Length: 185
Image 1: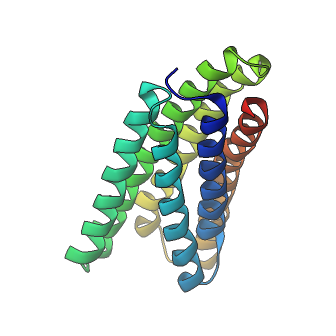
Image 2 (image 1 turned 135 degrees about the vertical axis):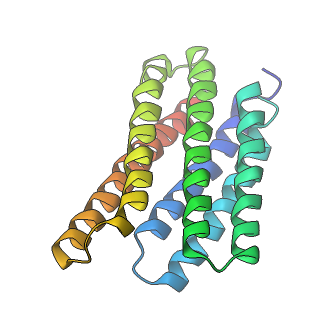
């Protein structure tokens, strides 16, 4: 490992805070405040990934994916007014996010094996699998949502499923990161 456990813990702490902001941004009812939280979370996550970049190769790949995702979101927002194009870009970014979570969990699990967090390292796989499944559910709801009848019960059900998937996936990831930060201090 090129960096110390302490610097990795600092970077993971920023990624942890970023993911709390991302979760709050996703569930926020105010589009303005939700967007601000999402932007702050994305920026903070980039800084955290830069900090852990030298510790393991998966962190470097996660940083590249985060940059690609941010660029795609920015391009989609600037170049199109089409809701379908924006939704497609969001779906691709969510898929990239799931891969990024897998990379961060895998790299962190590898570091935890050499520290006091060996038992926590075994939680990495269920965390990223749950995150990936929740991401798939979220993207599926984004795809089928416009195809469903515009009935209030259908809308509320899809919204609740979307919210539950976001909270479960990102919540498990936040708990894993929190434990990793404590173990690597």
